[in-house]
Length: 414
Length: 145
Image 1 (cartoon, rainbow over the protein chains, first blue to last red):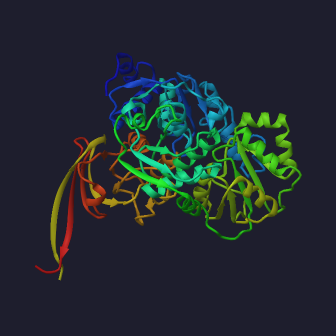
Image 2 (cartoon, rainbow over the protein chains, first blue to last red):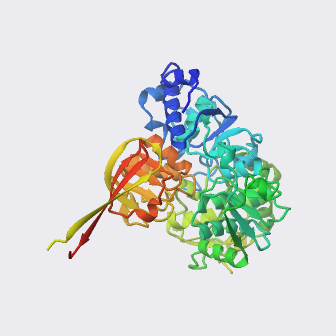
Image 3 (cartoon, rainbow over the protein chains, first blue to last red):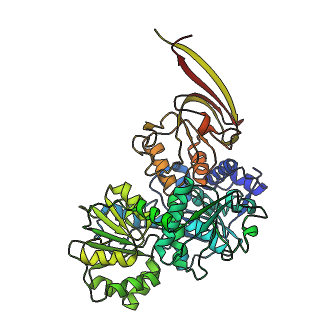
């Protein structure tokens, strides 16, 4: 991969050990992608990962990092809920790890480096909306597909090391979805049923993954209603990230790189066509349910994090009702949106009914749910599929209305 | 009496993802892999295959699933020492590109023949990732001449 004179200097350590490590990593990563050069990014998103933390870097790199600032506006994603971490069963040790001001791999280092925490997995809900055609790095499941598909931003499905190195250097390899020719659709998905609720989009994504064996080919959807909302697309992006290997999709006549089918395919024709009808949607729904005991212990809403609009809907459904004494109702949204929810009185309505409005995390991210949980209900296919495996519990997957009904009655009714 | 051992060798040519030359036994997984729940982080066992990826040439179609992929895979390899010695993918997902670069695992993708169809668990494999060449030796036992 070609490096400019400046990049060569960084690679050879002229700008200190931290940038040397980052540039050396970016060249290895660029070679891996078959990229010819590095390109400038407009912004970056990073997320601390327990598997590869800052502590894994050589000590001389870590000490140099403490004096470094990120090169482009960089946003941190998830953390712990500062208000309810005890209610959620987070240990004091973990809470400190995330929030301490002077520890590595935590809020402290991030702030010293100039990283702005947004405390959400869906930062496009709270202002992270880069400009169409610009490049950025992004991780967290629903984010890359949302940026690439809905906003026309060019990003790969990165993980912590690549996001972190790119944030410090301000560049990323020109490979994968950063190249126009890799963004064309190959797989036509004909939607032959009416999609109305958010969960239909979860089911559409799961059906696509099941029918294609977790495809990596970019899908082009036809037959999607014209009046879709951000929340529908958030569900589709979350579902796709759990069931396929794609970081992007097109919707003919809707998404910015798909004015027509031909446009979406780059002048070619789709290589394969599948269809999703009501029967296929139902099958997808069934793969998310284990159909165990109807007695629900935990109801999880907000994966990906709920928008204010969705929280408003939950508050309306809950008004004047009481969550069953044996059930915990956890609703997740971005930190800053919860401040708005507070001022609108939505947090109050939810807590009066016995639910918790939470932010910055979710059960599958934390890796635990309340002790004794045997049955979870959720309106998210991603949460359903991962929680089933992670916690070995029974799952019910259905609409938000059904989930709230289960939270109030204590039972899932089909 | 022991059967007669027949060796068959075939060559697959692809693209280097991360360089290096290694030799070992193949672990072939027929379906795309998530890091969780497909890989047991603590012992490296791939659930579709029932075997650990530790020290093997890990062959699978491509990576997919939630973005915890990297985190899970690094944990399996770095924290619990279950790293494969090489990776062969039909198609390269970004998750594997980053993982190969961070962990410096010889990796090859985009081969001229389908490795998932042609290779089997237990095959002896020489991966020359620098040149993008995978040499597969199948060891078959025949009971009679």
